[in-house]
Image 1: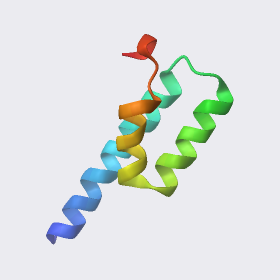
Image 2: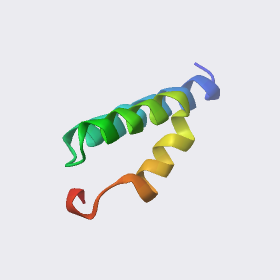
Image 3: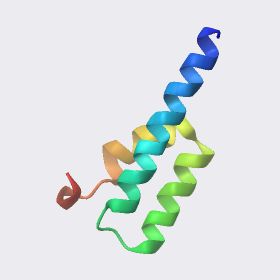
Length: 60
C-alpha cells in the first residue's frame, strides 16, 4: 500500500466523519444536503471548509 492510498483512506474516513457530523447537526435539510454534496465533490477542501465555517455554534 503506497503513501497515496494511505492518504486517500485517511481522507475518506475523515469525509465519512464529516458527513455523519453534518447529518447529526441542527441545520435544515437543505443545508445538510448542500454540505454533503460539497464534501463529496471536494473531499479534502469541502471537509475543511465545513469544519471552519459550516458548523453551527449549537453543534459544537
